[in-house]
Image (cartoon, rainbow, N blue to C red):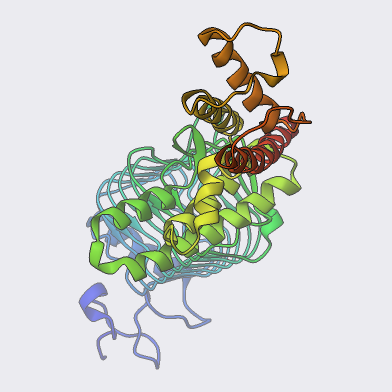
Length: 411
């Protein structure tokens, strides 16, 4: 009889017309008992290469087992598979595995890198309390039903790039348990959430998680920890793109495109948190959105945007807006005093001492900047121009301060 097509993996003879052995055959008449015996012999021999295996119903119980290493590449699990409390001591590979039923990895421990790249979970996938001590690769994975990572631990990089989640999604930490590592980056880039309102991140650390090109407008974020930049909640992707901007002088256009992606992501998150009336975080994400826009544009191209940032932090920084208003008041007051202009018309009864001149100059500046005319002082033409400029700057800065206060009070 001819050898199995995957003889290099199994070392067995073919049993069906397709040239496959008892471990690889997909035939409906495949004997479960014979399959389990062959699988048991393989495990006893500590041969953990299960590439292209076809596991029929009730033959996929690895619960509590310890596998030195494991390669399930291109395998198919016909029904439920159980890896609860299993331990993978070396690298584990589930490349393009087809999980046709429920898959349980609750409490499993992956000591080294594990890959579920291009795997398909047609039933519920549960990784509750699983521990990933090294890289966890879920690139291009498809979850057609619920994906549950409740209280899982990712101690290293977690990569869900281009993954698809069609059902409920739970990344929920237990109490202060933060799920994702704060030392290694994790990626949810270009992820597709089919039902955004069913996706929930709760009590998790997102300080080093990238969501580039992933739609987050309806995703639920509850008590999560974001990256911090200059005292505000921000995205890890902003930090990375700004670092790249500073280092790679010759690739500015490419970096600008990446900044545009981060800006779009900030806009989505701002909308998300505004709809949930979380004004403080929405304000931080509005600031991040405008920062990405400003960094993409030079001062000469968009001076008003740069001034908007400088004068009030995009109407998100009350103290900056107030500080600039005070700066204008003091600055123009000093100009009136140092230029020798007579601003004592408001207090003509006061003796013309140096102290009274200083006081009247600052009082006059305060009157101008807060529109408290009429101006009884006769200024020279230069003084009139300066007075007009101060009134314009004062009006703009007071408006920015009011907007910033409104944003703060909404919180």
